Length: 110
Image (tube, rainbow, N blue to C red):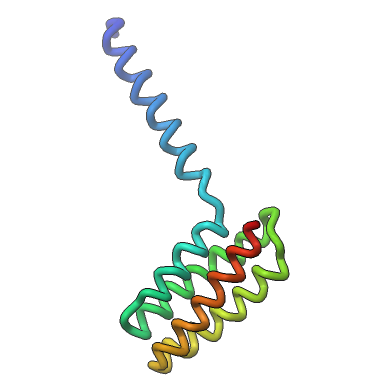
């Protein structure tokens, strides 16, 4: 291999490492907040329930991080209610529960 090829491969490797670091920097709680916010803006109950379920998965994983578990647990309860309401077609009630989950997760992040 010549010097130019080695430099190109090294540059690609360095860029890949930095991009993986940026992705890994986002916590599970941040992911839970993003999915819960997406649930709040959903226009259909099934889509809302899907986002709420994804948020719940990340929220459970966030309990291993250094977070306020009380607020995370309350947020998970709200997501459970949002999932139920969304699957039952009660869109407004589901949105309210998802919004409450967002509030709890943001409090846990403080």
